Each structure stands twice: as C-alpha cells, then as structure tokens.
Image (cartoon, rainbow over all chains, first blue to last red; front, side, top):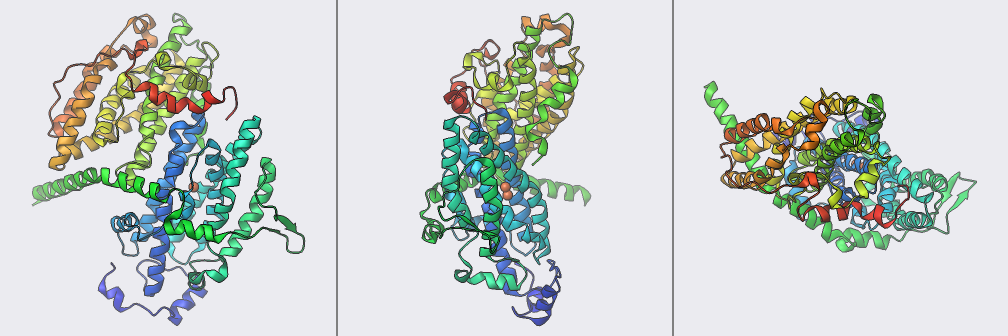
Length: 323
Length: 273
Ligand SMILES: [Fe+2]
Ligand SMILES: [Fe+2]
C-alpha cells in the first residue's frame, strides 16, 4: 500500500478543499493527497474494469480459431489483443494507487473482486462475435467516454487510449452483423438470434437503476462518474436503435418506442433479478470463465517464476561487475 | 487495434505484381506451389499461436503472442492470395476448402503445444531462425511479389526470433524447474527442425525465384545452437522425425486443427462472411 506519510496527510472523505478541487474540474494525480474512500473506490472500480478486459478476452478468444475468413480472423485476433492491452493499461493505472497487479489478480482468482457479468454469457455462434462487438463494446464506449474526464488522472488517460480502440471494436461487430443480416436466410437468423441473446444483458452492463445504486452518488460527487447509470443506459439505447434498423435486425423489446416529447427511445422494464443472479455467480459460464483464468495463471506460474529468477540473477550479476 | 489488421493483403500483393508473372523462366503454377508452402507454414503456425491468446502465462505475453500470430497470419494471407492467382482461388478458398492432404506445411508448425509454453517458445525459436534466413534471401528473389512479401516479413520474423530468444534464455537460466522444462521443450521440437531444410525438385526448378532451404540449415542452426548454449542448455541429440509435409503427408495433428478452423465455412459453403 501507499507510504505512511501519505496516510498521515490523508484528507477526510468530505474534505472541503478536496471537493473544491473536484468541483473546479481539477485532476487528482497519484502523488496528491486524497481521501481514503476515494482511493479505495478507485482501486475497486479500476481493478474491476481491468479484470473485465481480461475475462472479456475469453468469449471472443474462443472464436479466433474458428473465424470464418482469414480477414475476420485477423481482425478478431487484433481485437482480443487490444483487450489484453486495455487490461495492462488499467492494471498500471490501479498500481499508481499503491496496489499491485499480482495482488489484484489473486483477488480476482479468489473471487474477491468482480468483473463485468456480461462475459458470463456464452458465444455459441459466429454472430455472437458480431453482437459482442456491436452491443458490448458499444455499451463499453458509452460508459467509458465520460471516464476520459474522470477526476483521477491516470484512469482518465488510460480511458483516452482505450476509447480510440473501442470504436474499431464496435465497428467490426457492426460489420459482422451487417454481412450476416444481408446474407443467406440462415445467416440472417443467426444474426437475429445473437442480438436477441445480447440485447438485455448489454442494457444491464450499465448497472442497477439509479435508485438502487448506492455507490453511484459518491462516485459522482468525487468526479469519478459523470453520468448516472440510467442516463448512460438511455444514451446507449438512443444510439443503438437506429443502428439496429441500419442492420436490418430487430431488438427484442416490444415496448421500444420513440418518445417525441423527450426525444428519447422508451424501452421496456429490465429484469434485474437476472443480473443479480449472474453477479452472484449463477450465470451460464461464471465457473468456466474463472476456471479458464485460474488455469492459465497456474499453468504460467513456473514461467513467471523463471522470469523473476532470471531477472534477479542478472541484476545481481551486473551489480557484481559494477562493484 | 490497427485499422489495417483486416486489409494488409492488397497492400503487398497489389503493389508488387498483380498475378504470377514475376520471372519469365518460372512456371506460374510452380511459383504458386512454392508460395503455398510458405503460406501454409505461416497459416498453420498462426493458428497454433492463436490458441495462446487469453491463455498465456502473463498479460504481456498474451499481447506478444497475439502480435506474432497476427504477423504470421498476415504473411499467410499475402502468400496464399498470391498462390491463388495461378488458378483463380482466393485466400479463403485455399485456407478453408483444402483437406489435410492439400496442405504443404512442415510438421513442425502443426504439432500441438498442449499448453506447454516451453514447447511453444522452442518451436518459435527454431521456426523464426529458419524464417529469418529464408526471407532475408527471398527478398532478392527474381519474382517481385515474393521479394516484396519477404522484405516486409523479414522484419517481423526478426522480432519473433528475438522474442523466442529472450524466453529461451530466461527459462533455460531461470529456475531449476524451468530449466528442465525448457530442455524438454527443445528435445520435443528438435526432431521436426530437419524438415525445414529439405530441398526438392520444385525448389531446384525455380532457381532464383526460390531459396534452396538446404542452404539455410547452417546459419539457422548456428543461431539456435548459440541461444541454447547461452541459455546453459544442451543441444538435443535426438533422431530426426520423418517429415513429408511438403508432399501433403501430415501427422495426425493437422486434421483436427483444420477441422476446427474450417468448420463454419464448410458447414455453410459459398456465403460471404
Ligand atoms: Fe476493452
Ligand atoms: Fe473492446
């Protein structure tokens, strides 16, 4: 954790000077004094975000070997590689807060930290890869663009890099679905079924409704979050409905209707009991995702140990020659 | 992600020579057969390396192995596209609609790594050492397309060789366990290296269009041996595996690899993806 001197200077959660800095749209940097609650809440959020990036490699990674054209294979490989890169940026951002990637991964593997529940859904067909790019990366962009203005500097800067890549991700997903939707009847069906599977889970990526989201208000007060869950969800729906039309696909919500008065798309009620079920570990693939992650980590333990041992040997050897 | 990931092929093939016509003396179908070998090597190894993405020992390595797989896939695409101009087949028709007997890759690239990182690294060392020597020479091919493809690829495979080298050194001179595993990885890969350097009549007939792999044996192996020694490991003394990949004879590992890769286009033939 961070050094003792920082702890001594730590302002209270509602420290007026700190809140004034936030209100002034100031950036908090790792060396600055910050409330313990602010630090903890960022560590939790950034770690969860980083974990989501790396667990998120799995559902798409499973299609790299099966992508139906070499061009699609190349794009998918590059996309999954990007997600690994996003994980790296985010773990690095978390480390500026005095935590260690190794510990964060241990906490993920022990089930003590979460990742986005969306990645607990299966990808049975190629069209699911399109739906993930279009909807899941689309929802991620909606969430992440405001985070580029987050009050914590390293997180905001990581988001700037990530958001640039996410728009490619969404576009390639859209393009997969567009090709399928305008292909054979069988392909069109495949695309429609995938969208049916992913629509509601992607709406749930924005989290519970505002009145059910206790941490949100604090995050907004601290300038970590700029918009509420419901505002972001609405923004996503407004962006996505016209895109679905362009795809020639329907969204599985009979209540979807344009509201002239508000200028927004009204959508049906979300069954959050499903979300909470998945969060609590009862999603279709929670166990499999975690087993895969732990398996890769455990199989790689000897490799990491060797790299450490080699680095230590060579550091002491070069220290030896210097002395 | 690089915007170019999907569209790098036209760049190289298109800018050099549109179709097989690089060397007046060479038969187009023979140049195609040669390009197909090299392309199949790259494609099959890209498929194997792709299996590591989301399963690597650490996150940096997910990124690095994905990079290598992407480079190999890019090489495969340009080479298959070029090979296909001989008889009007696309890269995808060549990749997805041939059975194992139609593939011309060496056995080294099709062997499964089964999640063994030492095997993965040992294979990459041997294969990239071969590819560096190959592409460095093929960059002067009298066939302009092969020359252009090679000039681009040689920089990529130099990075692959360097990456593999770093890992063999770390694992060989890391812990007692990693040393044993790395030696075992080298021992397992070694029997398959010889096939890379086998020459045959096609290569002889192609003359300055192609590179005789027999001439690559000495420099490539010298590099690999140097790394093995520096890693405090020993050069394996094991019997050579039979080979035959260039004639379409494969180990039992290739058919399942292709079955996975080709499943969808074969189930729904003739459609766009
Ligand atoms: Fe991402
Ligand atoms: Fe993404």
